[in-house]
Image (cartoon, rainbow, N blue to C red; front, side, top):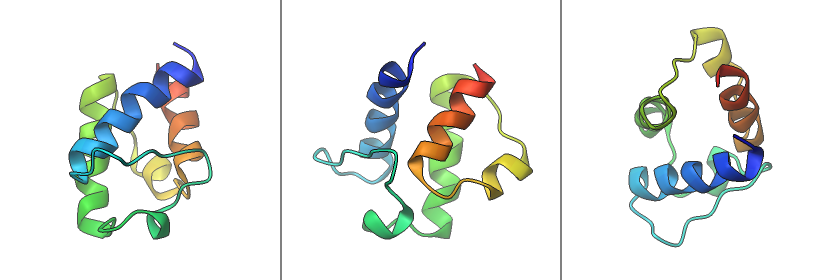
Length: 79
């Protein structure tokens, strides 16, 4: 799976979690860029991403996610 394929699936997850069909994330997207992305929704998002890609992040990885690009890198490492 390449980065573009990850983004196709990841954008679908973000749209579902944040209930926004127009939401599109990119490498530089952070929680500050997405309405309602707070600590509680972050947990929901991580769980949804793990389910979508059939992976599991360790706590060190989750804490290190500063932007969506970091998340994509972590997904690619786990696949």
